Amino acid sequence: MYDYRMMNGYGYDPAFGWVMMLFWGVLFIIAILVTVRLVRGYDHHYGRSHRHAALDIAKERYAKGEIDKEQFEQLKKDLEK
Image 1 (cartoon, rainbow, N blue to C red):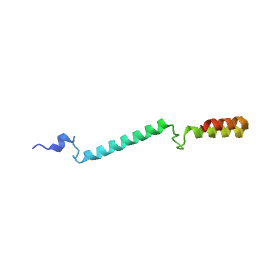
Image 2: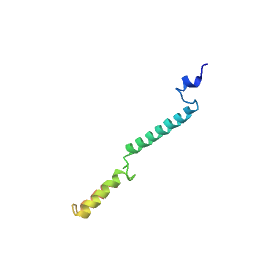
Image 3: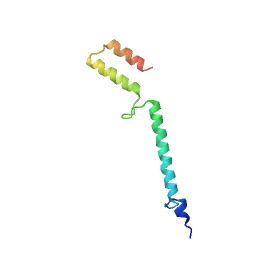
Image 4: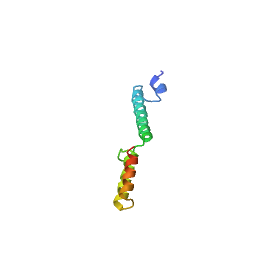
């Protein structure tokens, strides 16, 4: 006697198909979200934009004395645009 579950489902229960569709759907949505985050330029550790990271670097350089106050203020002004 022919058993449709063995041939069409490759040995799986036919109800298993919706689980796989859900899995691939969630995986597809996660891939889209990751792509959007990368395109928008977000840091994956902190969720902050590169503009804020650049300002943090400028603050560090100012604190170390590598740049003076005028240079820091100019960098800050340029990054806020």
